[in-house]
Length: 492
Image (cartoon, rainbow, N blue to C red; front, side, top):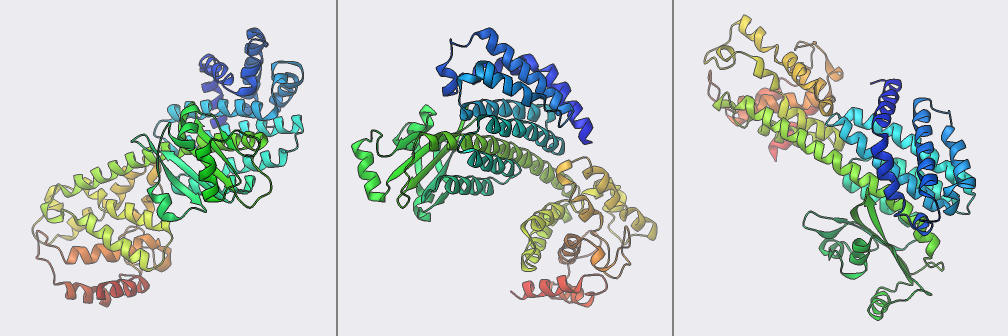
């Protein structure tokens, strides 16, 4: 989808759902402390008109980037209307609530189309990010640099779809912006308990065992109330907490809830024992903003993981459907996958490449679903004409897999798995390193597994004979570097 078409599609969606969004946002805004304080002072009419005006201009700005109608509206609202009742952090928090609503809306609209979802998310995040920075500029607060840094981290967070990497980045941002010496990020598990997902300054064995029930302790209280807790000089501190902090040699601590669209995702815990500056309300306000960024990113990441698991389930179902046609090849794809991944690891290939090898190995024979049984299951040697039919299975594979956006990087690997290193293979007669490295790895694993398994037309080959056959064809059928690594693995 082109960027212009994406913007037009988003604008149509926002116009069609504007009534629902504005009603939902209006209710959420008054959960922000600064707005709640002035609830009743600001008339409902002024409040409704203000958010309606902003939302209308937001749609215009999305349709035509750099139009900056929202910037003009924000200035009017901040200096002349209901937004004048709040500080910058409160206004930014209200805009983040809107952003969460919009991201949730587009995720439902895009369904399982991950590429479309990524593009829609990018447009929404860019548009809302511009307005959040605009609020910072208008208020001219002392901590704008920190706010802009947090927004920069927010843009990085939303692009990460690995929950472990995301939690590490969130914690790193929180520690850098707060000057903390000790920190942990806890996420809510399916059983309702919170567990540490990432930590700094906490022994790994302790972090691994930690399990907090919502409502108990400092973190549990923050999770239950949805309000940050500061434990510093000048704040009332329970005796038990004082003893706990002395045991950890902490001078000050801060715990902040991580929320997304009204739902608890986890809690961010920060502590200081070296820094002279203790946590105060300004720190809490700033880290609440970071926590909102984190909450949106975590929710988004979990959505992508669910879609990923859905795709993986489909992949294994497809692979099983192929092997179910022939008892002789039962488990073939799984065995090829195991060998190919081991070769990839021994070649020190990046993690992303190993993931592609794993998926492509499971699906390398998917195209055989289009080969007639009288050819695929023939108990004797194939004729030249029948072999030509077999050679079409990579093309059939592409026709099946090209409809799954998640597998777009896997398609060329499956398509070129039967190329030969000397250029005499099929389908495209690629040669040498022009063949994807993943295809070269799978080719060796597939050949070995096929030779050492029974087939309708022959019995399995002895393991050593199969290894010798692969060694003999290094440099002609197979990549010699891949073969060399394969032979080392076989020795082990």
